[in-house]
Length: 400
Image (cartoon, rainbow, N blue to C red):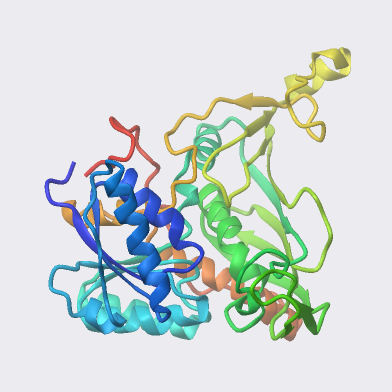
């Protein structure tokens, strides 16, 4: 374990900040939250109070300061890493200013809202020799890591393809401030796509080309959640995207993300190989289940349907549930941040790095571009999978 925790400043204390505060305070002690900042002061105060309450209950943490603005955080000499939890369209400016002030940055997804912004951020980080990375870090959890090991160890043979779907009717029924999901940087692909595309490249490797067809089904949305109940949102982005991804290995994947459909099983992720099929867990989570089907399983079910495991979802008769082989089965957001902070101390590469974020962003933004231009797009970014997770001696402590 690193002797000296890396001090982090949180910029943006909105809905996603709660799980970060919880995990930094209770689980990942290789990171220390130095301070918090939000454009709405009450949110920053609430974030500080959350940590202070945990400390009063016995948590081994430090009470964070409240910065009056992000520049005060950037100028704090004790802060090494900026945790950027602002809205997607704000990621670029916050990250850029943090890098200009000499701070490493870990950002919520996506890296930026277009490739031009991403290229500028990457160039700036490289010029200043600063770490840049970010969410999602769910691929580092027990579920995706177990699926990756099964694929890497050949349990389903050579990969033929994959199918992914994130299906729902949008966030205006439950999110307290849903408008940004329908503005620049929003939509189902840039919102939820990072989980699916990141998992795909972790499992299948570099993507080579993308084709897509997209639409905007509803021009306006009515918010039914509080405190904006009854307000109307003008929709500026595509809200139903269907696409194909050609990987350098030759594998072909299909993905659908939508905010336009009423559905109950909102997450689906299947990987097909020459020797079997793997059901990957919801990539917006860290855990399982991971399900495996091989030819011998099919033969057994055909000869005696009673052999099908009854604890397996009915959509997958005959599949075997594989025990999770890695740690972090629970909601472990801040795992990627911690990994970057530990890597900063040791000098190794961090897993949720900008190379991965940039490749994922190019794939995601290419669907609408392909649809508008009516052609398949060759990708320009290159990608190498980051290191698999290692067994942990202690939960919450990552290897140097």
